[in-house]
Structure formats: structure tokens, C-alpha cells
Image 1: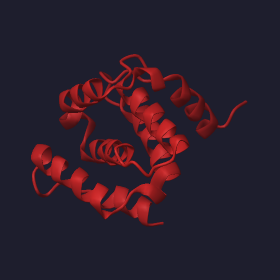
Image 2: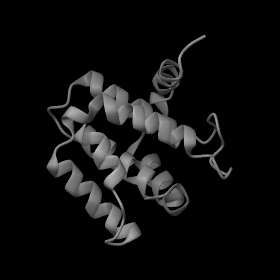
Image 3: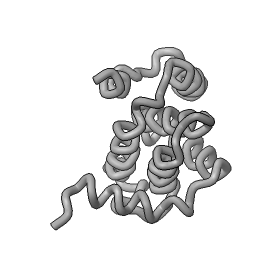
Image 4: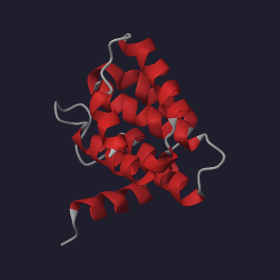
Length: 134
């Protein structure tokens, strides 16, 4: 039996084709409040890291897979369920750990600025930031 991270990695690879900037922003805006600031911040970090020209293709493929999984309307746990974003958080979190080396202060600042627009200045990013600082 595959380990959970390996299963998630496989699913992420299959969902790359679903990623587009338009679908990313549509999904994120639609579900931002329901998903919560932690998931949104993680997705924004990955999105802005993807925009950096010096990020290797393998890291970009990981990001695209995770964001594609987030965008995909039919995933392991449907997003309409109360716990529906748990699998999305798993995919995004796995990708975040894998590409953390490419997330710099500029990426964090852009993600926090967008997050503040949606959640206000008091949006809590401490849990995600702790994971990045390890």
C-alpha cells in the first residue's frame, strides 16, 4: 500500500492539466472564506513562487500539480463538505514543503498583501510561516 504522501504526489501529477491562472483565481476567490486563511495563504505562496523565473521546472511541476488538485472540482473529499478542504491542504502542504527553498520574502509579502485584501490585516499566517522556517 502506498504511503499517503506518495498517493498525494501521484494525484498531484495527474491534476497538472487542470491548472490555469484563471481557474486558480476563480476557485480561490470563490472559496477563500470557506477554505480559511491558512489554505489561501499556502495557495498564494505556491502561486507566487510559480511566477519566479529562477524556479526549476521540477519545482514548478510540483506547484502546478498541487494547484491543479486544489482547482479540480472533483477530488478525494468534495469541497462542499465541512472537511472538504483537508485533502486540498494536504496537497498544497506537501508541495509547499517540497518547494520551500524557493519561497523568499518577496513571495511572502505578495501572498500576505493579497491575503490581507480578503481577510483583513489580522489574517494569521504564523502556522504556515513556521512550516517554512523549519
